Length: 144
Image (cartoon, rainbow, N blue to C red; front, side, top):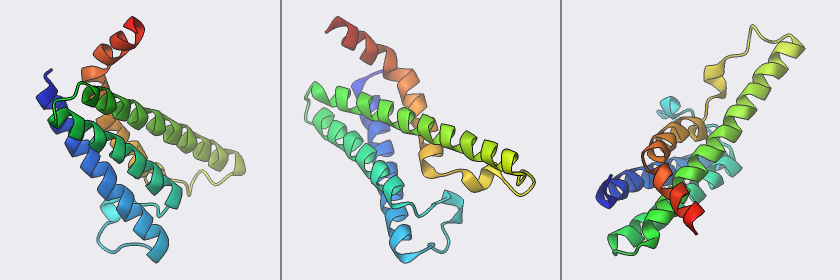
């Protein structure tokens, strides 16, 4: 795939991460935001910060790609890697919450839908990008 496709995909992910990260941080400060229930915002300040950092990496890569710098593709690839890594951490946390609910006996009241947060569903998009461009990125790492 071309750098143009990576630029567009990285820009979309960067904006999504930044906007949802800001919304999550605002939700942590002022409380639940009405009308945004579909985004599953948890109001976690640190989760919002992580989303902002990943979004900043994507946007930095997009800016460098748009300027014609070869480093831009690396930034976007690292953004994909961060997205997948934090998504896996959240998936492990979700499994731990489920196991805890099972062991404590609250399995009937526990729902996966209640535990889903933006790091999980945005990681799916990051995984798509990583599957599309990850081989090239990893090949470049082994060559260095």
